[in-house]
Image: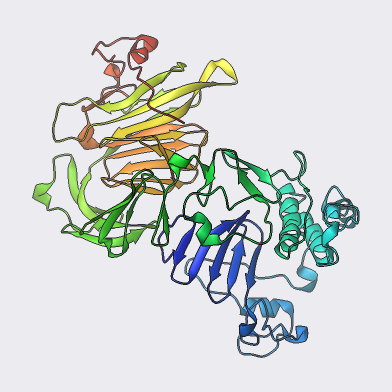
Length: 509
């Protein structure tokens, strides 16, 4: 919203944004409503007070279907392509292709069309004995049926396109109060629901929500298929959580548990405690920082923070990502990938199949000027007991424990509480998703990533050289002493060394 990532539901003045079934709804007090299923279908609804005042691809809403194709200058377009091209919106850095016209438009092969017309494909939409037949007297299925066939042809029979096409008709029917029978099965367009929820063609959404959520969306008069919370769980605007994991709804915003949010103009820092409510404190941006929004997160970001003489020997005063500061001269990365293969900071490669929790890397220096931290990994078998993969990554820093698990790819645990991503935590720690990686960063010193392929990396700056220990080695430039146990013993026995770095389990997924 205005460049800032917000949780759902959200209220700002006369605007409400919330989930309804599989859709996100934006609704104004003047009666304008926009819905989007995040994949395939969107709709815009306006009240009659806007009649004759509209323009664009949706027409002019004047009651006359024969003059819909008006150009921005008010003249009638000569053809559909000209009409569509005229309403393009220019966005810097974005290039869009031109529309097809007449003979240049692809057509659906008749043989494939005959297949897609059958009841086990698009035919379910207009099957008089099918689960959607009750809607035919209210909304003709023919446009939805023909659109489904064409889209399925153009996508080479993609089942996701098929399911979204059928869903668009179901949504239109439910929106006007038609009682739709269950049409999805485990083998036909099953809807995958997040943890602690299940599919329902008409889910109950009002009596099982976290406090404050129902007031935003109001209890809908019509059904909207989607995911319903399992017994004992409550809808928090995006997913289903236990009561003690419900967040805080204050001043039109929903705060996830343990989430830290900087308010407008960076005047306050607020965090949510499920038991204590929303707690805010006054703040001001330090000298040489500026209140800005970057990657959807508002915070005090560095502007000029260094002079050449103030930087350490391992640092240089330079501009990185638009920020001038004392940045490390170099970095090193340790990784665990595959079954798993470990690569230390100093470049030593070894294999280890243990299925316990291990100290991947931690600060071992007694230098009080360095921030203590540790990264632990938990390995698990996958398919064969002879092979293990990284299942859980836990980062301890500044008194916080941040946990990532392969079972919950879009959430993290912060001190035992589930938090949605992206998240801005205390002490300039951020967690976000990029290119299928969950990334935990602390300024330019430590960066931890975990991928959907269960690969974990830890990147540290040069000022931590010879200050760390664990399965990643000591980062002293000599791979020959990377196999050092927790007692300081160097060994050629990999199992002996890594077993010495076993750690306790702090996760609670």
